[in-house]
Length: 128
Image 1 (cartoon, rainbow, N blue to C red):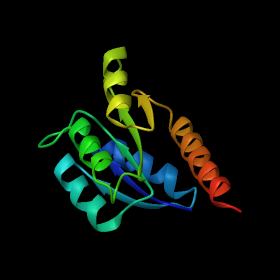
Image 2: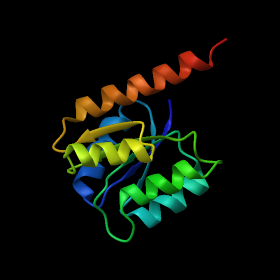
Image 3: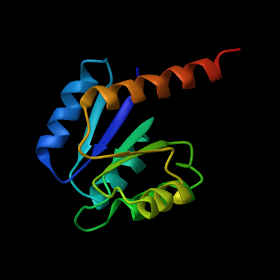
């Protein structure tokens, strides 16, 4: 399957997503803040990043902007998963370059279904 980076400052959310996505066969990396996320993204080049917005040191919008403006990382799929649920928050995330925007609270099955769809679409588009 794929390599996924989970970025959230709440360990319970990281653990819940890690369990759900690992059971789908993915390799899971985690970061508790935006600065650590950028380091991991640069070193590991994950296929997918699931990114919170409200975090210490560097918020998710800034992480997203750095990822999407770096030509070597621009192909990384980013899913925002955040409590920021106002239309202007969603618009900002999508305008910066998020591929998907989900809000908390969430059901783990919604996240795993979206991730499954992302990887299925990716494998279909790379087949001859």
